[in-house]
Length: 329
Ligand code: PBG
Image (tube, rainbow, N blue to C red; front, side, top):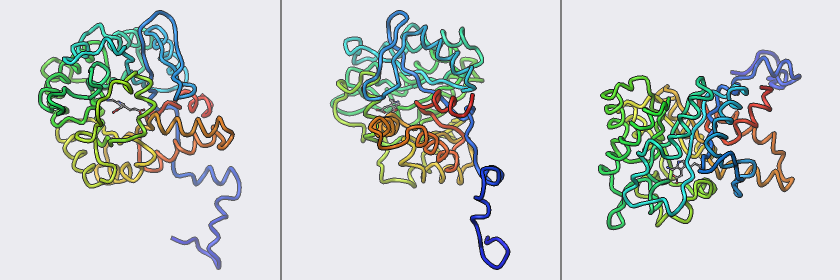
């Protein structure tokens, strides 16, 4: 629709900060952010992740401190990812459903320290798998149904530890239904599922695999279970399937190269839709900013508002605390 008058002067509404504020279509607030944090063994320490400037791995007590920081900044949720030593990984991935594994200890510590922060988890076997894959591997094949049984065990233990939001990130078929049924049967009706629904086989996960120590472990690629970056209709089928199976919220991952998918999902389904601005996206912006090639603060905010404009309700982002601070929290 063109504005009335002799000339369509659309610049009239860009004239001043006040007018621009009045007609702004979307907003970003700290309440839109989920902060992914990496937890490692040890006591009261943290260490940098080389390929993700500003991101650290923290011991359990420091993750609890981070949760308090999130609370003070108005960030409603944190998502916990474990760093596991290569020698601790096995073919049977038994550590994945050990209530005392590092991720589960971190869930309990966060619920103790900051009970109002929602704790999100990651459900996939890769941090515990000698092969680095999200599922069990037999004769070079990533097994689906056997993996789903293991994911259910992981999910139940995480719920038992106090997780609020479970994040199956494995891309096995049928896992959302299996997890939902098991949660209901175990009395965890209030635990929600944010499914990594449209998760692409992406090279943008590279720095994350460094952060969790998986780079050396992975044999082959994840192309038989994660999505082909060329596909869009397939994402719609996956969303329909995950919602039918009981997912409360869905995710598109990576984020910025897949904003078209975010928009399609939101328009077609109108359900709570999240994007994961993944490690490689973060690393790109940080690296360019460190070189003085981009204004780091500005591209951070521009990249985040883009998710809201594309229809996302929230964003998982390593920028969460920095962005919340920039928003004046
Ligand atoms: C593993 C998992 C990955 C990420 C989140 N969960 C990596 C992968 O699938 O290989 C990537 C996150 C990021 O790159 O920031 N299940």
